[in-house]
Length: 227
Image (cartoon, rainbow, N blue to C red; front, side, top):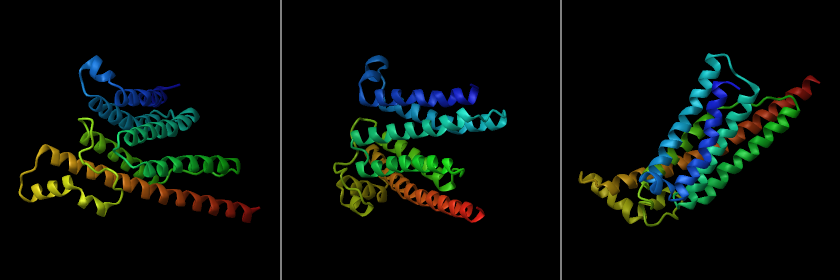
C-alpha cells in the first residue's frame, strides 16, 4: 500500500456515499444541505483524484500491480453508480446507461482473454475522452436538477432533434435571443449539455470498444504469424 493506492481506495469509498446522498434524505436531515450539492462535490473530488493518484504514482515511482488493478475498478464503480442514479432520477435514458456499462463489462472480459494470451491492451485516447464526457454528463445533469426534478417536462426524448419540441427548451432559446435568460433557462441549457455529453459518451464507448477489439485481433494475428 502507498499514497496513490489509498487515494484510489478513497474513490471507491465515495461510491456508496454518492448513492446515499442522492437517493436518501440523509444530507438534508444531518447537514441541512441539498443531497445534490454534496453529490456534485463528492463526484468532482473523486474524478479529480483519478488524475492525482496516477500522477503521484508516476512521480514517486510507486506504480504497483495493486494500483493497476484498483484504478479501473474505482473508475467503473464511480461512473456506473452515478449513471444508474441518473436513470433513477429521470435525468438519463436507461438505454444509454446500459450501453455504457455493458461496454465496460465487454472490455473487461476482452482484457482478461487478451491477458491469458499474453496480449496487453493499454488504455486508448478515445477511452479517456469517453471517461471525461461521462464526467461532464454526470456533473451537468446533477447541477441542472439541483432542486430534485428535471428542468424539462418531457425527459423521455432521447434524440437531439426532438428536444426542440420540448416547451422549456424553446422558451430557453427564445429568452436567449431576447437576453432575458432566467435561472430555469440556465438549468435547461445545463440539461442539454449533460445530454449532449451523454451522447458523446455512448458514441465514444462504442468506437473505443471497436478499437480495442481491432487491436486484439491484430495482435493475435501477429502472434500467430510469429509462431
